[in-house]
Image (cartoon, rainbow, N blue to C red; front, side, top):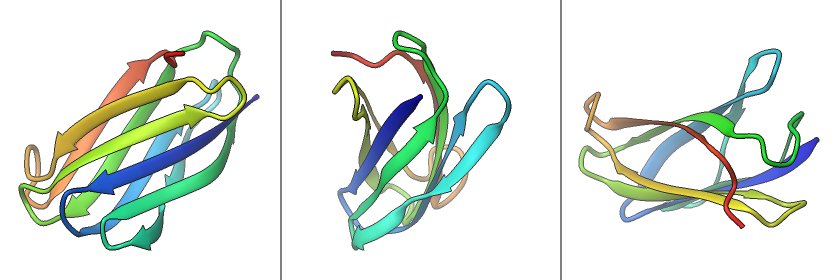
Length: 106
């Protein structure tokens, strides 16, 4: 079992954010909580996975089109991270859909 922390930082106001994380049985939605206008986070997401497994995720961010943001997913047990950046309005106006299937870096 892995315990994850998700941190999202925008270069402008972010209106809403949610992440879907695949586990071996299903895709689980998790709504991020607003810290302030540009920061959202979720501190404790438990997911069944073994060390060294890739994490499959889909992050949805809603903000004004052209808002840049970065996201860091941390495995609290190992300290490993997955980091990525994107911008809203790339695929759907005022929204970004960032997908990945990555291992945690140490």
